[in-house]
Length: 294
Image (cartoon, rainbow, N blue to C red; front, side, top):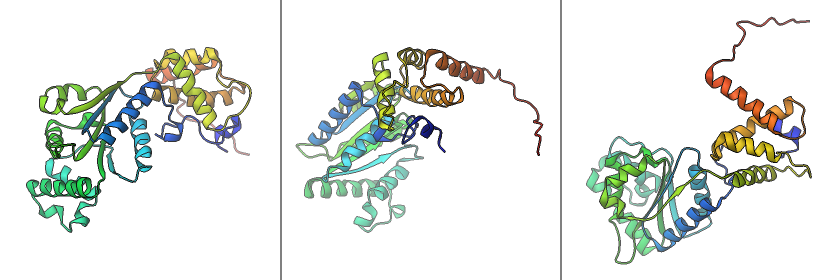
């Protein structure tokens, strides 16, 4: 039996998987998502979302994908790990992932970089102009893009009509992405929308916890997380959603072990103390175990 069923949940409330169903839409996330969708609708070209580790960029990207699936005129692809050896490898991946090789009956392995660019432009013209579709490329972990890949993206953004860009690009990256693009004025100038995601405040932390608890099927009239517990969680995690989720997962397991009915300050502090001990390597494990068998 899964631990969370013992507490009355139908699903695991604090999984770290980027499930859009469990994504708590803060005001900042809602603002960024709404603006990205507007930019895509207007075909403005380039949107960039910055955020520290654990602020919800990946979850936001999955929610964006979910929204795009609802729109029949959106043809999109998401890159989760944008690490490529060179421009040729990157363009080859794009052509295969968008099905361009099948559409035009070509073998990317037999094409040079200029041919790959021309083929991709031909695809954009056919789909965006002739078929009236919006071509979207989403890149998560965009801080991993090196300068040559950013230059390649800049070139692709040059494909346009008099009214709009043919390729709509959404980058989501850690703050290390910013100095890279600042040093590329021609790339920076193409950003139509940029936004920085910040950690949650204590009110949003409470709302995130309650949202996940309810979404997972908990319907007791009694609060599972007391306000004093939420304050401790916020103080330790500093409002980073990923840290909040991980800590709450540990807290619920400890709740069962201690046979308690609600998460209070003491229980959260117990879990945090254990976490800190592990970090410091101060917990000693026995070299061997004596097991009595009957």
